[in-house]
Each structure stands twice: as structure tokens, then as C-alpha cells.
Length: 266
Image (cartoon, rainbow, N blue to C red):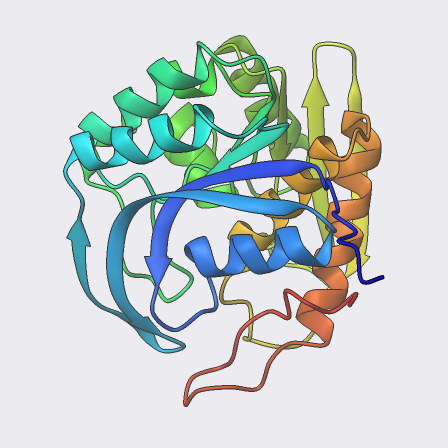
């Protein structure tokens, strides 16, 4: 007999923009979920015409369409964790913050403001709206530029990363992972700050510009690991290790620097 043998993987949700080049956004998140053995669901906030060299154009979806996608997913699936990426506008940030306050599962907030290429993905006035979403975050994962914009702390070393992380916790986040990829030096130091203490995760810097999708991939990996039941510190450690491999073994695609390898562990 050829009876069905169903699988019941953990389920994660990504709320982010679409990247036509496949390196970042929804595409990166779903690929990363799959690599971690997690079933991916999504709510798309914007459609970007994008590639390895930059963002050509952006079309933001109406908040009602984003809300409809969230309703569809949350009304049918037992979501175990979620992550947010490009939210684009004040209205969408506020919508996602309201929904995050209602759910019981952990939400990883990647406060996407600018693409790796330097193209802006968030309207400036929406930065203020992020405080409500950060307050609902199980983990917020800013890079140095995002940390400075949201906390006023210029992240230039480990000490200032700790200061910025504490500021996020004071805003209400359960934890803040202040990423070190934009801080110069031969070692990348990601600093995890909670009310209970501080942990630092270090990796040798890979000499490449092929980091397109790195922030999305890291946040998605953390969410996937949380969905699988890993505790926060273990999830972050595993996700930062995964990203280091994804950058080292990056995809040499497109005419730009390339993209991180979301499937490096498959």
C-alpha cells in the first residue's frame, strides 16, 4: 500500500517585503525556514523590484491587504514563532504591532530601514511607530545603523552595542541582538542583551560584499529555531553560526556582489 505519511513541522510566519532577486525579504525568510525544517507562512507588505545591485522600485500594499493575509494565516495555522522585516509605512508598523500584542508566540523584530545596497525601505516618520512593535518583541535584531536611529546610541564597539541593547530592553523588548556586521574589525561581534544579562557571539569576518539578505536570514533563522522549541540563547547562537556559514558559502549570482546562502545547511 502507498499510504500517505504526513509530516507536521513547526510553523513560522514572516511579515515582510518581497525581493524579486530572491536574496532577501520573504524569499530569504521562506528558504531559511525550510532549511531549518520549519513550514513557512507569510504576509507580504510590499513588492520590490530588486536585485543584487539594489532596489529599482517599491510598491507598498494597502494595510487592509496585509491585515487580510495575517487573518488568513493566523486563522488556520498554529504559528509557533514569527519574524518581521520590511514594514515600509507607519500604518503597517502600527498594524503589526497591534497584532503582535495579541499573539502568544514569540515575535522576532528585524527593524528593516535600509537595504544592504543602501536603498531606503522605511519611510522616516515610521521610525517612531517602531517603539510599540519593539515593546512586543521577543528579540529585536538591529544592525548598528538601525540601533542608532531607534535609540540614539552610535554603535561603534562592544560597549556601545551593550548600551544600545539596554535601551531596546528599556523600550520593552524581551531581548535585543545588536548585530556587529556594520562595525569595523576583523571579528564580527553580535551582542545579546536581556534584563538578566549579556552574551556575545563572535565570528571571524568573511572578506566578501555578498551579504545581501543577511539581516533577513538571521532573523528568520532565530524565529525558526524558536518555533522548534529552542531557548532564546541557543536559538541566537545557532542562528549566528548559521549566518556565518551562509555568508562564507554565499551564492555567486547576479551582477552584484551576490547573496547569502539560505540553504547552506541542506
